[in-house]
Length: 272
Image 1 (cartoon, rainbow, N blue to C red):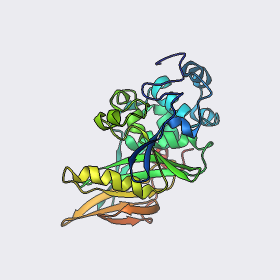
Image 2 (cartoon, rainbow, N blue to C red):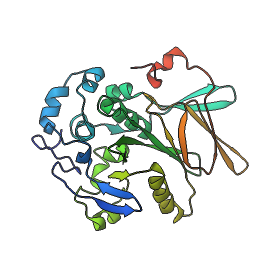
Image 3 (cartoon, rainbow, N blue to C red):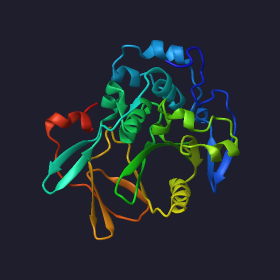
């Protein structure tokens, strides 16, 4: 456990107060705008020690408190935990549910996002995921929270304790933000998710890359997904429902498909 008696984490600052513009209608704000922490890291440890996942969720942690738990107390570890399931001619990627991610304390970006979604769900009714797909068919998942007529976007993978030293410390300094190795390691605020997608896309285009972006509902587990190329066109298949396509450079097909075998319950919405 890090910083026992502090409200601060490796990069979050409990007393931070700033609003730094990154792009058009896109701002860097401290995570505490979603609620200040009621507990030190040591107190969160005492509250959550030896408690099962559902008891932790029932504590109603806000976003800041959840990151304290994630980064300073339970120390979520980054690992490739994708499970593959063959159904017909397609190979589907499956990801842990939020509850299972809390229980195992490790995983990829989808597991980290599901972890966050699970822990904060009693605090924020309107939330979901942003996903982007790279040209090679691989992807990444982030969380969003909608409150006070704004979207707040947080990339939980950057908040893992081994990644947090490479993100900007919450001081609002634009020079520090621009020089950070992991530039998505902040809390973004915007009125439209599309504004974040456009900003992120512009950065990728400087390297000649063309990404695709869409948002999804706050599933307990990210729905199984399959990617396949047909010529130069990347086709994305998902068993979930897409809220909206933000920037579309792909063919996206949602819904339908198959029912997962019972042995994969921890990778589904049924594991609660």
